[in-house]
Each structure stands twice: as structure tokens, then as C-alpha cells.
Amino acid sequence: MLVDWPLERLRDYLPERDEPADFDEFWADTLRQAREAGTPARFEPYDAGLTTVEVYDVTFAGFAGQPVRGWFLVPAHLEGRLPCVVSYIGYGGGRGLPHEWLTWSAAGYAHLVMDTRGQGSNGYYVGDTPDPDPAGLPQTPGFMTRGLTDPRSYYYRRVFTDAVRAVDAVREHPRVDPERVVVTGGSQGGGITLAVAGLVDGLAAVLPDVPFLCHYRRATEITDANPYQELVTYLKTHRNHVETAFRTLSYFDGVNFAARATAPTLFSVALMDAVCPPSTIFAAYNHYAGTEKEITVWPYNGHEGGAGFQFPRQAELLRRILGKDESTLG
Image 1 (tube, helix red, strand yellow):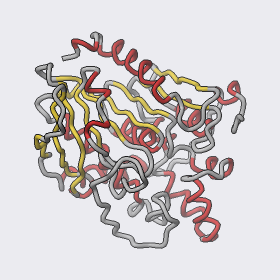
Image 2 (cartoon, one colour; image 1 turned 180 degrees about the vertical axis):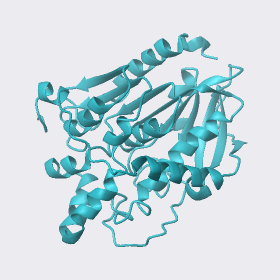
Image 3 (tube, one colour; image 1 turned 180 degrees about the horizontal axis):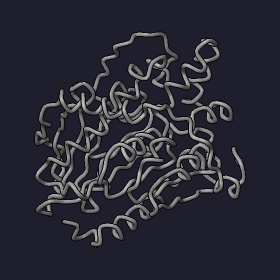
Image 4 (cartoon, helix red, strand yellow; image 1 turned 90 degrees about the horizontal axis):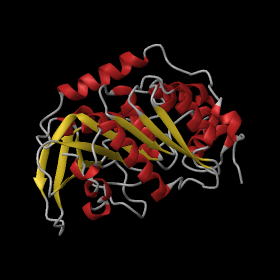
């Protein structure tokens, strides 16, 4: 069943943004510190048993210069600088194995898959990047409340910084055209995508699917599904931290990043999605600052969204933006 407002109301939903006055300063300082602590990324050839794609085991410097893992896949039959898709992963998942990520390289793109620090042990994609947690404060099991009492210690400060540094890393690679970098992901990966869209200039396109990490307060008020339920459980226990928590979350809200993002975008939303309620996604989409934007609505789907049906729409958008057929993207 529908879990939120009718589509007509969702399309007009433009809530007031809860944004701290030092939002831009906070992120500029965070990214400056990460870049100053950075070292060159390593792309080491990896034998994945594949013949149509070259695979590299990647390590790059993320938040505070800490090592972050990834996979870099390049179509073996193409030469020169290629457009590159950077993928961010759903909640709980890690970078997995190279053969689980063949779609974008098969379409003619270089492809970086970023591991998500501390994740990758929930039963599907395996992870390889630890998260040195400097706070050690009480939290609800999961990642949503890790370091929640201060934006400087909040878990997603580290993750979003890693994601920006992933774009930095591929832009320096000799097989990548730095002006044709696309970011994408579903659920948590979609929320990370929006953060990068608001923090990185010059992206070719932004493709967030059923994005998580948007419009937190409303999400906690209308869904009892995890992961937002982690926030509810935490605030149910820490009754005196409600406003402190939402102040921290305002630095990490996809709605605020969307208001700074200008690259062409294609969102997706599912009207029966109890995990990422449609109004939280439309709040980000309607605030998205770019003028070239679309949203695909899947009326009878839950958090799976369009799944495999979304990719052809994304591919068509990139063909239009990049101005080339995908068989000759190099």
C-alpha cells in the first residue's frame, strides 16, 4: 500500500530546510583537512578471472587520510580516457567482489566501486575498510547513531568525505576523463550520491536511486522501518538529546546537499517504500538546484525501487549528456 502522501502532493512538497549557518564552512574545512592528509591512490592489477574487463584493487586516502578500499573496472576493449561512474553502496554492504559489478564497464564506462567504511558484514556484499571510531560513545546498533552528539564525530562525516575523495582519486587516473565523472548509488548509496553532488563541482551527472539520508526528522515521524528506526530507538533512550541529534543530522541531510547540486540528475522513488518514504526523497528532489532534473516514479514498488528497470533510463540520460553512443564512449 501507499506509505506516504498521494503523488500530486509529493510533487509539490518543498519543506523549509533545516540548515546550520556554518554548513559550508564545516564541509570546506573537513575536505581541506582530508586532502592535506591524503596520499596518492593505489590501483593494483587484480586477477578476477575476467577477460572483458581490467580489474584493479584500489586503496585511496579518505577522511583524515585513512585508507579506503574499492574496485576499479575498465573495459578491456577500449583505449584512452573514458567517462567514469563512481558507485556508492547500500546500507550494510561493502565493495563485494569484482564480478558483482560488471554493468557499467559492460556499457563502456570506467567504474569505481567505493567500499563503505565499517560496513560489509550484513550478509550480502563483503567489505574491507575499517572505521576507526574516535568517539566511542553509546549508540544504537547500526551506523545511524555512531558519534551522533557532535557533527565532527558523526559517522557520515567520514563516509561522505571518503566519497568525495573517491571522485578525487578517479579524476587523477590516466584512464579517466575528469570532466565526465558520474556518481550513483541506491538507498544509502543514493544519499551518499547526493552528498557528493553538493560537495563536488563539475560532475557530469548524478543518479541517486531511492536515496536514504534525507529529511531525517520527517522520516523518523512516519516510518518504523530500519535504518531510520535506529534514530528513533536512540532518541527514545536518550530523551535529552533530541535537538542535539537533529542539529548534527542537519549537516548530513540530503536535502541540504541537493540545494547545492547543479549537475544533471535522475532520481528514483517508489511510492510503497517504507524504508525511505517518498516525501523524504521528494524533499531532496524538489530542492535540487540543477535545472536539468528528472525523477522516475515506481508506484507499486517498495525499497527495491526500479531495480534493473532503472538502469536503461540512467544509460539513456548519460548517452544524451555525454553525446555519444555507449559502444564508443571512449
